[in-house]
Image (cartoon, rainbow, N blue to C red; front, side, top):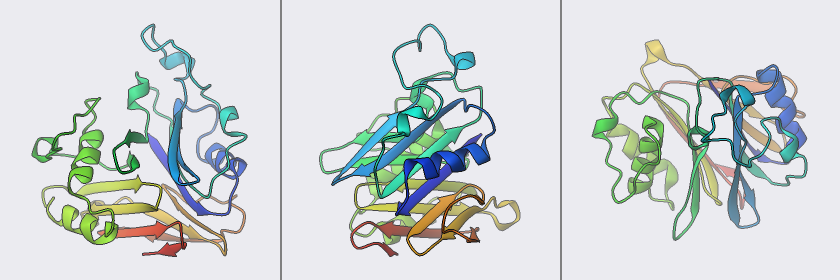
Length: 233
C-alpha cells in the first residue's frame, strides 16, 4: 500500500516523519521524497527494508527508516511511504522522478490505471512495468506547465475509460493533485489547511502542527498550489 503526504508551506522534516510514523506503524518497506531546494526539485529514495532486499538490489542506499531526512529543509515536498512488502526493486519506489531539459518532475500514483495500453508516452520510455509510471509519462507528454490545472483537467477528461485515478504531480513551481473516480467507488484524498501549511494526504493526520481541519477530495477534482506566491489554484 502507498501513503502520500504532500505539503506546501512552513514545516520541518520531523513534521513529515512524525506524520508518517502515525500512518505506518513500525519501519516502512520503503519511502521516497521529492522536495524543492531553491529553484530545483530534488529527490531521495530509501533502500528496501531487509525483508525486501535481493542480491540485485543490495547496493548502497538510504536506510529504510527516516534518519536521512533529519537535515532536510524545504517549503514544498511530496513524501511517499510504502507499507507493501511486495516491492522488490528500488525503481518501484515512488515518487517516480525525471529530470527533463526545462524542469524536473516527481509523480505519485495512488489510484489504479486499468487500461495502460491506451496511454501514449511520446518519446519517453518507462523504466518499470508499473502502469502508474506510464501514466506519469502520459501526463508529461500532454501537460502545459503554464496552465497545470486546465491542462490536467483536459487530460483526465480524455481518459473516460479510467474510473480510479488519483495522483500527485510536482515540479519546482507547483504541486498538483488530480482525481477521476467513479462516485460509487471513490477513495478520497484529504486536504488539511492551517495558516502556514497546506497538506494533501491519503488519510487525515492528527499530529500535524497547525492543521486542525480536514476536507475530503472525491469524485473528479484537480487542484494545484504554487510556491511563489503561495496560492491554491
